[in-house]
Each structure stands twice: as structure tokens, then as C-alpha cells.
Length: 167
Image (cartoon, rainbow, N blue to C red; front, top):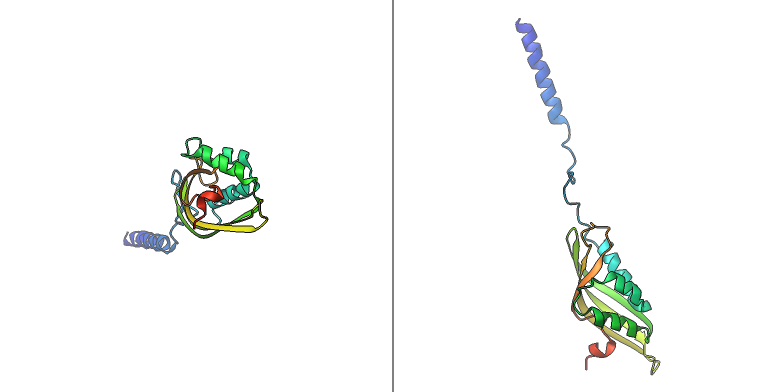
């Protein structure tokens, strides 16, 4: 009788040893958990900001109307500034020093920017720079949702050039 009991104990110890030797399950989002936030220069929110910049360069007011939240303070001014942008020639905007603060449905991007254009009156190249912060929201549709501009702080990169020129 002792023999079957010792065999059963041995089998139990072997099973416990095999279970301990197995690797732990991979850590990842569990069902119902918030997905990992992609907070790097190629994230969907940064891509949305880049698309806004390209639309500004082209003077695409319709794209801005689609991508700005309707309750954004100063919405009318921003749309007017984009429409005025059409009078400038070869406008190009370059972003540097990106600093991202990301959440699952909202991202704050702080950056420096340089805007270059050709003045239509004189034909001379012009340049202006500033530092801004933008708040982009995914409208509760996750990381790949339609990111929209919800706020601007610092130097307004979409403002008319006359309001940004410093002596």
C-alpha cells in the first residue's frame, strides 16, 4: 500500500515541477483593458497634426472644418486664417522638438515650428518661427480614430503672419 502512495506523491511533485518550469503568460492587454498608448513621433495623433499642417499649406478650409472641433475657441478665426493663407505663395511649415503626452483618446503635442513663404507684394522670402502646444482628441474612438484639433496654446501657428511678426 505504501508503494502506490509514494508513486502518486512522485507524480504530483513532477507535475508541480513542470508547471513551475513553464514560462509565465505574456503580459499584454487583457480583454476589456485599455490598449497600450503609442506615444512616439509616428503615432496617429502626430500623423493627424501633420495632415493639418499640409492642409494649412494648401489653404484647404474644408479639411480644417472637418478636423476642428465645433466648440473650439476661436474656430472662426482659425478658418479665416487658413483662407487668408491662400494669398501667400509657397508656404511651408516645419515642426521640430516634438514632445508628446499621450493618453488612449487624447494627446498633447508641444513643438517648435518654422513657417516660410514668399511675400506676394515684394516677392521676397519670409520666415517666422514659434513654439506651440496642440491638444488632439480621438473622439472616444481609440488610437486609430479621427483625431481632431481641440485646442492651441502658445504661438498660434495658423495665425496671420502680421500678428506674429516681432520687432
